[in-house]
Each structure stands twice: as structure tokens, then as C-alpha cells.
Amino acid sequence: MIQTDNLEAIKAIQESSLANLSSAFIRCIHYLLERVVTYFQILQ
Image (cartoon, rainbow, N blue to C red):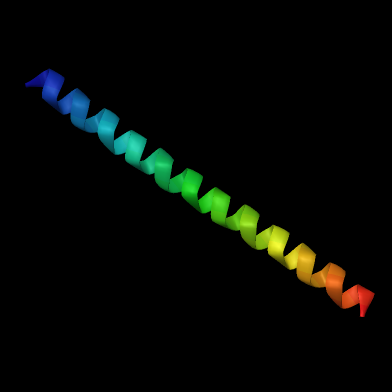
């Protein structure tokens, strides 16, 4: 019983970490796209 609960807790932590990683990756892409747009606006 304890092992099952621990496994479920580990899976929940892994899923949460993956979600956080995905959010960080999306924020990074968004930031980079903003920089690219700003760069091309300056060139015009």
C-alpha cells in the first residue's frame, strides 16, 4: 500500500515538473519571438 502511494506521488511530481518545463519553454519561445519582432521593427 505504501509503495503504491509513493509511486503515485512520484508520478504526480514528474507530471508537474513536465508541465513546468513546458511552460518555461513556451515562455522562452515567446520572449525570443518578441525580440525578433522588435529587431525587425527597428530595421524598417
